Image (cartoon, rainbow, N blue to C red; front, side, top):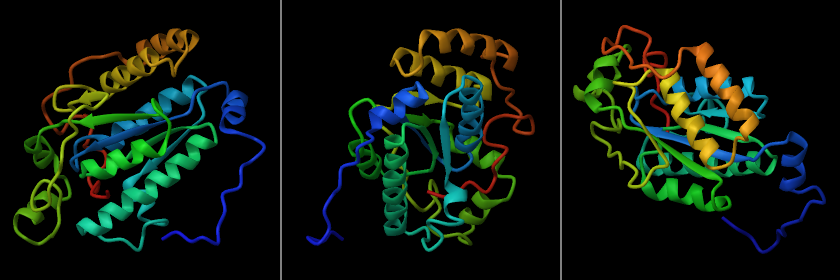
Length: 238
């Protein structure tokens, strides 16, 4: 709801000033995908790698945000839309502060993801689609949420009785059924370099960090191994 009694006040310190102080280019790295697809796991690993590169970041995770800012929201389509609207506005503020914002939300609807993209300037929204197959996500399911959803014990569960609209033109596509966490992070960092968000100096540091992390190797097919998506079984938020 808007009102004619409020007026936008421009600040003397701009986004450009704040970004210059941090010597970086702010953006939103938006992870979207099914529950159990590896969003939170890869997002957390990405933030760790960016921190190693002296980048100023903030990670907004679906479950965490529902503990505070969005604790009044459920999982109906209407509440999911409002959940993403609030997160989008929050991410926009962090970008204005000069940060690289990483978000991990199912965010099942194209319209809401498009809405967030339109909140920021061209090139500041990077959509990362976790295209891990539903069968893999269900196989992981360490807390039995998919099983409960199949039995009708959980309503509005994305991928079962609530739709997920896959991105048509994502910036990065990852599949943690065949890619390790480090490999996923490498792909995203490569994209950031291509977009000019990470500098050549950061690129050399990335290569060193990647060598230390184990590089881009295929993930083991066994879900019992440490593959993306197995570390955050409660990932339903978004």
